[in-house]
Structures are given as structure tokens and as C-alpha cells.
Length: 547
Image (cartoon, rainbow, N blue to C red):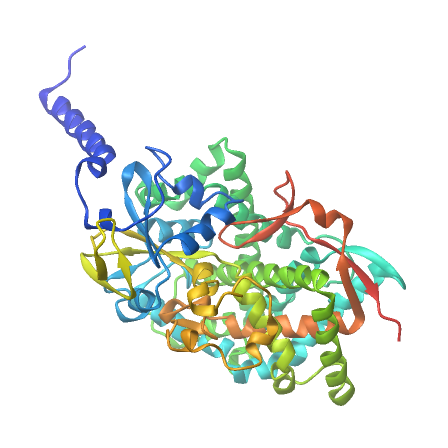
């Protein structure tokens, strides 16, 4: 069997290119080689196995404790990467030079598009700014103030369901299950304008379960996520889905099912909205005219736009899928972490409950929006929880061209020189350490790893305020910063405080025996599971407070 010279040349060129990609990082020098960092532990994966290890908290925290605020990591086949939590550097990456120089890596966009489509998290540049501007009214303080009654209505239904499970005494309750369902219903009612869970009993919600399984499944694929960049070359969506269906990996099948379930719910919501408009349904028409939810805003924009400017069907569906996923998992997991903290620190729980009951005595059980968000100890507790237990540990960016990155604290190079600027070559992957910034002892003090709500009841250290951390919320990086910061962080804040108000006003929280077997997993969103399990869960003992 003979091959044509052209085919042989093509094969040789292809093999040569692949070999060069696999070996060039070990041959060529880079300005990043002077940045200190942990040793690579694998010729193929570098530090990725450690960075994405679900129980790798100690290793991750060592990057913040043992190195400068700019750390060199190693990726696939020796690819140099940076782990950054220097405030000045983060300002440049997320604000000053965002998009023009530092944008999401292509594999990150493709990963998002696979899971939720071209919604707010899956587009960039002008496209992203247009979508965000369109959706801002749903998350304004004015709108949230008007939605407070709805929030209370949903949380009361959750509370009634928990009361039925607890009875008149004490019971072990999976609060993560309840919070996940509640967050789903709140994003449905407050964000999408539809009901998604009656919360009438302790039965499981299949959609909530699918949402909870999506982030762990994505995390299990994290070491190969760089290959997602090439998914766009695999042809039309139907063919990609066929390939996913035929892939034998259990992780891929879990993710495929979760994506399918969320997409099916999004299609159902869109269909019902359109049917309501066509039928002249009073609530649907009112929400549309008042811009009460994401779908009303999008449908109204499409009705007013020309054919050329209308949002395509896949974008409408992607926005819903985005908010179902982002609005459910992050807040419910953050609330679960707060319950874990309250179970450990009874003194903090008692102090928080005393403040809540005093406010309820003055304003009624449903504390009004302005008075609820102003409760000082509750606000301090929430801020401290989000500082220590941020749902996301890091985010990624990529240098689109060669650039020089300024830093606030000099980085002492491997050769002993002090660097105030870091030359960043095009293509460098950058991990922004959200958790590392929140826990940095050089900013927050020697007690940075301690849970102390009181730190928020007096002025923060000048080291924090002078650093100008670019986070959108309270000198923290929990909700990111810049034009791609979390659009729903105020929505999440209100949800969190309404839940704390109602739950702590009715129940005492204590550690369940099963909690000894709980581990917190590092993923796109940190989540708790029982040892040896992949199912998110968190049991606590809830005791009914007698009137």
C-alpha cells in the first residue's frame, strides 16, 4: 500500500506540529521562568492534578501562604501559567485591561456554551455588554425591594416544609436539599417569572438534583477542559450531542443528563411565556410591561427589535439555563456553609438569632427590605461567611497578546531580583485566586483564617482598604470584579438574609452525627458530600424553637 507524497508530507507536518506542541515548553525559555512557584509533578499535567483535586484545599492555600502574590504554575506539557491575587494585578486583569488583553480562555467559553449555551457567561466583548445591560433591571435594588414579599413567600413555604419534617422536637435535615430547591424557586419567581417548586414537602426536585450534579460533573472533567477549545470544530450541535451520547464516560453522561434537564425546563418556560402573551394572560402581559423578570425583558426586547437585531432562540434559552444554574448552586451552597458555621459556633448563632428576634418584634416576622439588609450583625456574619467560604475558589483569564502586568508588592524572582512588573507572554493562562485574596494575612491580618464577624463591625484594616481590591462586594473577590462580576450578587444577598431571618427565627441549628463524614469539595462551586460519594448533601440537626 502506497501513499501520495502530499499525504505523507501532511502526516509528517501534523506529527511534527504535535510533537513540537508537546515538547516546546520544555525547550524554550520564558520570562515566567523567573517567577517562583511549586514544582511540576507531572510531565503531562504539570500542576493541574493538584489544582483541580477536589480535596486539594491545603495545596491551594499553600500558594497563598508560601509564595508571592504572583505564582508560576505548570499546565499541560509544560505550559506556563500564573496564579495571581495581587490587588494591582487583579485590577489590570479584570478592569483596566480586561477584554483588550485579558479575556476568558477559549476553552472556558466553549465549556460554558456546552453546558448552558451563549448566555451571559458564554459570550464576550460587545455581545456580553449588550446582554448585561439588558438584564441589569432585574437585579437593581429598586426591583429587589419590590420582590421582597415574593422572597418571603417562597422562604415561608420552605420553612413550613422543614417544620413538617422536624415536627415539634428535633430532626436531622438535609439543608442543602432544601436550600437548593428554595434557590431554584427564588430564581424562578424572582428571575424568570415562573414557579419551579411548590416546596410543599421533603420530596426531591429532579431539576434541583440535576443542577446540583452539574458543577461536580464539570469539575471531574477539569483536567481535560482545555480540549473543549476544539469542540467548536466538531460540527453542528446535533452532532456534538450525538458524540456526547456515545461517550462511555459516566461523568460525561451525568453532565449530559443535567444539561438536558436544564435545557428542557428552559424550553418549557419560554413556551409558556409565549403562550401567555398570545393568549393575553394578565400576569404575563403585566410582567412584560413592567420588566419583572429576565424572560419578560428578553421577550420585550425581541418584540421591539428589528428582525436583524432580535435575539436568536438559542440565546433566549441560554439566558434561562444560565440563571437556573448560576442562581441555584452558588447561593444554596453558600447558605449551607453558613449553616455549617452556625452549628459549630453556638455563640455566634445565639447572637445572630437575638438580633433577628429583636427586629421581628419591632417589624414583624417578615422584616422589610431596608431594615433587613441593615441588620449589623447579620450583615457582618454574611460578609465573613462569604470571605472565608467563597463558593468559587478561582477564575481564569488568558493573555491575548504580550503584555506587562504591574504588581503592588514586588515579586522576588528565582534569580533574587525584585520585580514590580511581570512580562506576560501571549497565551498565558492566568488563575485569579479569589479565595487567596480573601484569606491573605498580609491584607486581613494574622487572624485572617479565623471566623470573626466582629471584624466587619469596625473599620477594616488600612491594608485592606488601601489595597483597592477590585471585587464588586465589600473588598472581597467572592463575586469577582469588573465588567464580568456576578450580576446577581444583590439578589443572592437578599435571598441569603431572608432565609437566615426565617430559619433562625424558628430553629436552633446543631451538628448532626453524619457531619463527621462530610467533606467540602473544591470545584467550580465548592460543595459538601459524604465521604466516598458524589452526591451533594449536608445534614444538620434542627430543633423547633418553642413559642
